[in-house]
Amino acid sequence: MPEGYSEALFYYLYSRIEKLMLIPKSICKGLSDAEILRKSIEEVDYFSCLYDRYEEKLLRYIHRIARISETEAEDLLQDAFVKIWKNLHAIDPELKLSSWVYRVVHNETVSWMRRKTSNGKDRNVPWNESFDTAVESSLPGEGEETQGQEGQIRFLLEQLPLVSREVLALKFFDEMSYAEISDVLKIPEGTVATRINRAKKAFAELAAKNKLSFEF
Image 1 (cartoon, one colour):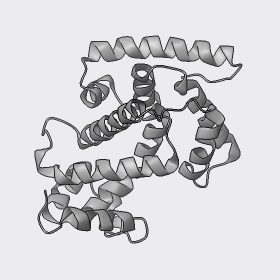
Image 2 (tube, one colour; image 1 turned 60 degrees about the vertical axis):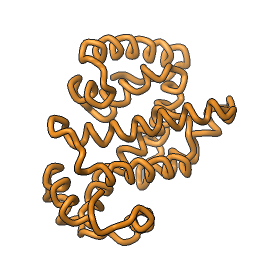
Image 3 (cartoon, one colour; image 1 turned 120 degrees about the vertical axis):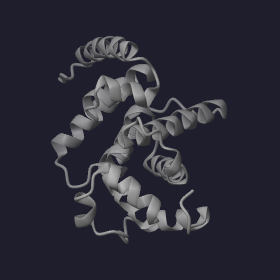
């Protein structure tokens, strides 16, 4: 864990990042991921740059692979960022920082889904109930057309198994390469390719069945 901050204090700082950007965004934008990592280890305030760069993308990813409320997604992401912060020194040097960050968030999301299922809280609520609020809050400033498409995407993804949702989200919405997806999910690239081909076909069939227009 980076020195100088207890875990409790970090939770407090995390809760204030959006209200008080610790490092100016203009500085963060000029830093590469590797530079943000190095500076975060030296001075924890720079971790706000990592949060600012990935928070929105990661929330979208969580919503695309899990049926989850906005509040639950934000809590899950906070826990994931705390784990990332605590393990900055342990990052595999052969992994891109983005792949490692997504891996942590992915694992946290899957663990959350398993806990929810084992606790009997995975209610089969209509999909419209679960994503309407999340779409509005996770797409600030975007038009109704974009929000509508995001809702359609989530509606279709929710009907696919997790192994299909995760590869489609990473490949076509987060625009990762097969190698990056392999790093996030810890599966061979050949398996990534097979899952993507099957998932694309299933997604297309669902879109046609529901009379929705969407192409990768």
